[in-house]
Length: 422
Image (cartoon, rainbow, N blue to C red; front, side):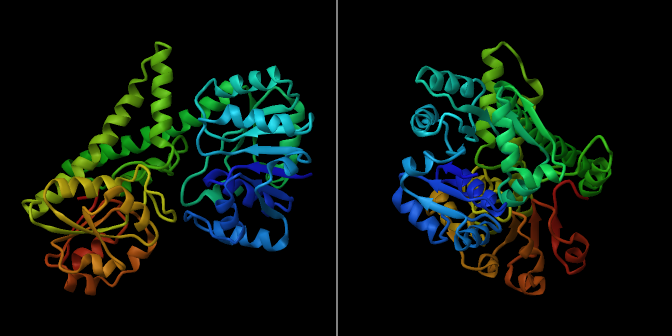
């Protein structure tokens, strides 16, 4: 079986590399010659943990090919993944591929799209004479662990009425199916809604623990221990139940907006979702206030910010709470010096010259009135905090991710403040 993947962005790069790693021949194609050439050389234009190694391994083995000739590879592909990062030209792209692909091919649409989009695409394909099976296949990938999520998914969700399409995709995912990963087959609309609803539910969960973190600080409770106690309840999973500044990611805001709009257009009020979004929007302001209270004022203060990506192991700053913090701090009159292991170029595009970017964590700390941990990069735990204390003008640490050892830092003389912790 030959697999083709249309696209050269985030989704397409992950899908093509991981399926090739299953041992299948995969061609990833796009008309963007410069991007394809970079990918073929192993130069990925974004950072995602372990992805570069997977791409290089499969290019060397010959299982993964990058091409600018869609027609040649589409004509012989049995399964074609359509994986643009935006759905704006999805229908046009599907029609182009359908006109070339074999009639028994399967068009697997992974591009995130609002409810109702895939049905519209299939009707357009049929009207144009296309006979291919159409499958809506949302992927539930998290930035920073997308390779792991692809290889160890909670479920494989397929929206289609084609038994042929289901059978072909099960062949592609045979290593996962044999491992017992559940395959859920439903209609287009349910599959589309599942992606947006999952995002909204996670956002609600994060917002809920963040509100409880506020309460913890008032009643001398500990949000980290509380999250552990709640997460071990079999009705509640521990994932995404850690207090912090909030959620982020490339599609989170857009998917929540899409779901809210869908509900509004159909006369449905999603009050819980609305409340979760309000908590998220306000939480960054609360952290800024916490920092301001610790310093008496933000105006004229120097603050070191560690971490700019929306989460560890990715360079994406889309929806990053650290970016919101940096903006809030500078708006309040503070001068911010920031460091991130991989996300500085992306952050520079967002923050321009309002923030000083540093090459090391220690450079971001030196001479600062306070240190703020904005992203939970594991390497920040391993900093030499004796050195950090010497470099700081005042030994204040505000840990928005509850990443660091609070007891140790307080015993060293730091004024340590976490989120929802006494």
